[in-house]
Length: 198
Length: 399
Image 1 (spheres, one colour):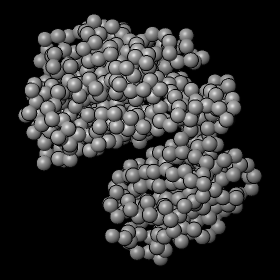
Image 2 (cartoon, helix red, strand yellow):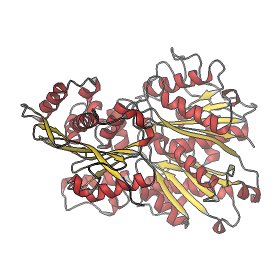
Image 3 (cartoon, rainbow over the protein chains, first blue to last red):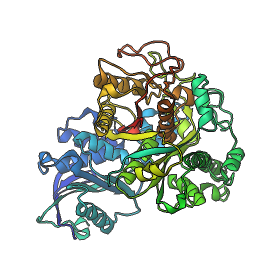
C-alpha cells in the first residue's frame, strides 16, 4: 500500500531569512546566529519564555516548527499520539557538545548538558505542542529526501501517525539551516515526495 | 491468546550481593552497598560514593563463562541471566520459543572510555576491539549468542525505566502468544560517562543517599543486573516448582515536561501507577507495598511522592526505596527492584528505606524504616521513572 500523503506547509530559516510556502516572510539584520534567532522570535511576536533556555539547535528547530504550524495546522483534528516528528541533520548536537566541553574546564553546566543530544529538539517541539507520536532523529551528511520520504510514508502506511513534521535542522558555529515540512494524509496540491522536498 | 504471565526465575547481582540470596540477606540485615570508588580511574575517586559490585571483571567473566575483555555491562548481565535461567529450571527449554529482552543505558561505554585515553593522545593508537561493543545492543547480543537464544532478542534503552520496560515488553510478547518464555531485565556497569553526566546535573549526593528524606541531596550511582524469567500459563503448568507470582499490571506514561526532570505534580508517575492498577484490575487499597523509584534526588522524590499522595490518599501502603541499598543502577534498576518486589511477595516482607530521618514537608507519609515481616503481601507496585519523562509502573501479584 502506497501512502497517500501531501505536504500541507513548508517553512525554512537560513541565511538571515525566513520563508514559508515559498514566500519570503522576513529578512533579519543580525549577523550572528544567536542574535538572528532572537530577532526572528521578536519579529513574529512569539511568546514562549522557555525559548530563551534552549540551545541554538532547539531554538532554530522550535522557531521553524512554530512558523510552519502557524495558520496551517488544525491541532484539534489530531490526538497527541497521532502527530509524529522525523528530523535529520549533519552535525547532531555538536554545536552544544563543544560549548558543554568548554564549560567542563570550570563548572560543567547542567543547562548546556541537557542539550547534548539532537533529539532534545524534538522533545522541545513536542512539549510545546503536546505531541506524543512517533519520533526519530537521523544523522546523515546531506539531506536524504528519498530516505525521509520512505521512512515517513512507511509510518503513515502502518497507521503509526496521522500527521508528521519532517525535515532538516542543522547548526554548527555560525552556520544554520532549517527546512521543515508538515505532512498530512490525503490528496493535496503538493504530493509528499522526495522531489517535492528537494 | 491472552495468557497470564508468571515469574518462574530470578537473577540479580548488585553492590549488596552477587546473587539473589545474597541480596535478600543484605536487604534483611540493612547492609547497604555504597562505598568509595575503587575501580574507575576518575578525578571523583575520593569525593563521590558509588555502589560497586564487589567482583572484578575477571571474576565476573569466570562466573558467566565470557571473555574478561568484554564490557562489564555484558559480564554483569551474563551472571544474573545464568542465575535466572538456572532458578527457573525449565525442562526442555530448547524446545520452547525463548526470547531475551535486555535493557541497559551505557552499553560498552566502560571499554570506549579506555579506548579514548590512548586514541585522543595519538589517533593511530587505541585498541579498536574496545569500541567494537560500544552499542547498547551489543550487550544483549553477546549474552544471547553465548546462550544460544535466537527466537527473539532485543534491547531497550529508556534511561532509568529501561529494564522495567523490558519486563513489560516481554510480558506483552507472551500475552500475545509470540513467545513461551522470556528472560527480561537489564544491566549497567559504572562508567565515567554516567558519573560525570549525573555530576553535571548536580544530583549526586556526596554522602550515602537518603531517599524520601526532607534533607536528601541526590542519588548514589550503582551498578548491577537483574533478570526475571517470564513464562506463559502453559509453561507455568510444566514447572517443577510453583512460580513466584504473576505480573498482573504494567503501564508506561510520559509527562512530556523536561529532559531530565519530572513535572512538579508528578503527572507521568501518576499516570503510570494509575494505568498499571487499571491493567491489573486493582484498587489502590489492594497494593500491599510500593517499591518506590526513590532515587534520593530532590526532584524525583518530590514528584513521585506527590503522585503517590494524589493517587493513594488517604490510606498509604508501606513504601520504601531499595536504592538506599544498591544505589541507582540505572538500566538495571527496574529489574533489580522487580526482583526485590517479588522477594517481598514470596517472603511477606517489606524492606526498609535506609537512612531516613526527616519527613518531607509536602508529603503526608513516611517510608518504612525497619524490616517488616509476617505481613500479607498480595500485590506489589514497583516504580521506575526515567529521564525524558519515561515512567513505568509494574504490579506483581501473589498466585
